[in-house]
Length: 306
Image 1: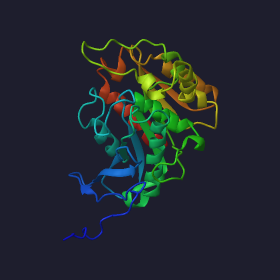
Image 2: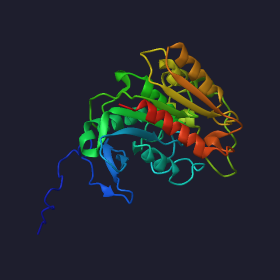
Image 3: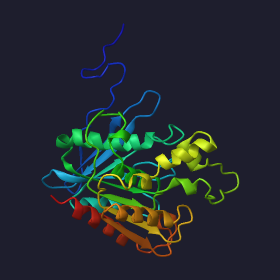
Image 4: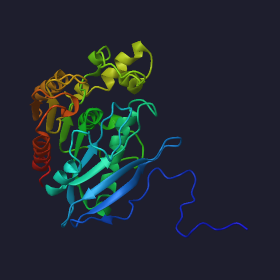
């Protein structure tokens, strides 16, 4: 005997391009949390998920989209870099009266660029399309990313509709009001020959630039240019940018943020370049992590005011 599926079960095929928001979970401080919302699906790939953390009080709230790092090869929306004290980033954003949207995206060995940018923009479209249900303001959205996520945040702030993709909610505005970019790459072309730190013995990690861009060595130069935020800095008026970068970063040179800051300023944009003196990648070696997060949150809150 065949059993009928439970009432309300989605039995359609193919699966939908995205799912409705899940029910919220109340938090101890009076806010609410939506965990594991499917904002985009592509056959053959894991669903792309996001979490929404909403502060206590009356909304709608401005929203900050958090984009994790990991060399485009790794990473998870639930985990900030290990140099960030547990819970500090989330608490700081919510305490400022901002909602935090933490997103996953396809890693580069799942799909090369521009899949990652398409996913970021799909997440922004989803938040706008479901803003009422989630309690966020669709007109006040910013992006904040670290390392690979900083690169994607910069691209989300600078690229136009030709880079929107069609994943998830297939159409809609993907513009943002502000960008915080922590030690992201801005010009991939010179980094194609930038030597990476040696891996520990027995640890095999693909070259992140080759994995992101795919193709042959000759093809990668043009693809690197297309994946570089500096390529788009001279386009339409850019949103305000905060670039934070360790001056001793051995993985992504500090000059990468300098280059983007100069390009944004030349285009008439508002840009703050914040060197973190003596810090390596992920601000390793800096004693000021709480201050760096506070500065980032203040920058976002100021630019997300009505």
